[in-house]
Amino acid sequence: MTPTHQHYAIEDTARSPQVHWLSHLLNGAYKLPGLEGKRGVLFSNSVLEKHIEEEDKHDNFELTSGINRSLRTLSSGEQKKALLSHLLLQNPDFIVLNNPYETLDKASVSALKQQLIALSKDLPIVFIFNRQDDVLPVITHAITFEKTELKAVVPIEDYTLKKNAFVFDKDIPPAITTYTNIPEVLVELKNVNVNYEDRSILKNINWTIKKKEFWHLIGPNGSGKSTLLSMIYGNNSKGYGQDVYLFGNKKGSGESVWDIKQKIGYISPAMLELFKTSHTVEQMIISGFFDSIGLYQSPSTAQRQTAAQWMEVLNLGKEKNTSFLKLSPAIQRLILIARAMIKHPPLLILDEPLINVDDEGRALISALINKIAKESETSILFVAHRDEANIHPDFTYELHPSLNGSVGLQK
Image (cartoon, rainbow, N blue to C red; front, side):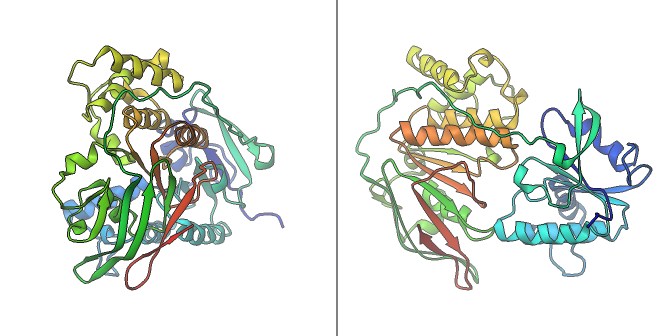
């Protein structure tokens, strides 16, 4: 069946910076069949964030006026549903979808995908993607770029999607930091329950993480992954008085949050907000020895040498003096992982390390994570809301929501 509309895909890479063309596309300035001279609307996380800010600053509940709720109280899936409904009420000529599935779990992705496929019968779609698997089956053409400018429109069947396979061929540096009295069992949760006011978050959670294990924590949005992480990372008061054991000590038995965090390497996308000043790649990696935001102490010769070895592992030796802030999101994640691993902590927590990066970056980061799992004694806790084909954990702990709180299932 011949599609009613032409639908376009744009790969979201450094070669197609949106700042140069997105506003022109929305104004119909490009000669694309079905879009020339037309008016488009943008569906993206940035637009959603602006509406959330409007609610916070001006009590403008434009997207949720019919349900008497604020956007912040909705799940990611509900927020995006509200945004899509709001945009469609504006009767646009076409819609630009900028990585629409980011932050969504598997069920929400599936529901939104079906809604977008149905929408494609009535409205031309421009789909900006960084995951090749996300491209809608209704897409008819791909837009390519040259020097940030629109280059050509090709039938989607003629567009070659890159297949990425990355290998880091240098061994990760050995540990120069020594940890003592680390038990075989690093984390143990026994019948842990978490409730906030009248809402149950976690129900009878039983989970044990031992030395040199590679775990994948997965669960839909709102299932309690962040709550569970905060119990382990040491900054959730709900853990006190419960059977939560961290590195052999029951939580609340005298150890400080700092004692716990010294034994854990941790990264999350939110960490990028902490690094606003211009630190070099070398300074960022060395700062992992001091758990500091930036480097404010003089490192030892051994620490400098270890950082140099990590930069060689990451193929970033030539970027040693480059500003961290000037690098791509994927390379920034690699550096944050090296920073978290430079002391070879007993436990490494990777909270959504693959979110908002393209397929090339995802392959790079996944290769490094698998390498650390293979070559170090560090246990890894990898967290995601979607399955990741390139990640190869030993075990999976999956949270399943229920009315009485999420229950955990070990695989």
